[in-house]
Amino acid sequence: MAEETRKSDYSIKSRWGDDLHAVSRWRNASVRLGGFVPVVRSFLRLYSSYSPHGMRLTATDAMLILHILDSKWDEGAPRVKTAVLAKRLGISAQQVKKYLRDFKNFDIDARYNAKTREYEFDFDQFFQGLAKYAEKKRQDKDFGLEVKAEVK
Image (tube, rainbow, N blue to C red; front, side, top):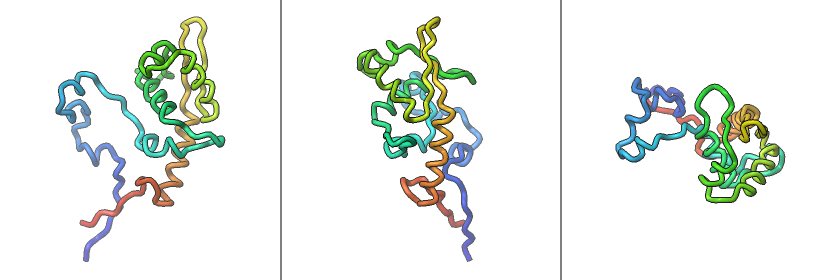
């Protein structure tokens, strides 16, 4: 009789093995040299339906978040100037500021530091809320987030 076991598809080690050096996974040299941004899969799959306060993230909001996360280098909050985000997104700095004002609707704290002329971002509440939402979606077996049974 086949034994069914539940194994998370989301475990890094189950997907990559002991070689956790992600750069070695890319064959294309330009991708390897350009680097990458680690992103929570539930964010990619659920950002367009997640609405903690009645508003949903747009694709531009999501790209803005990815560019902000690309500015995170250590345990501290990511910090970046609006001009840098505007250039990366191909929009004006004023448009970036409008998107940043809307971040409060998604439990993302964007604080402006006049001394450094950068915004500092706190995503803790956002990702905590997203994790709860993703768990609900997993239980509903929605958006491909369910844990799949494997037969040995």
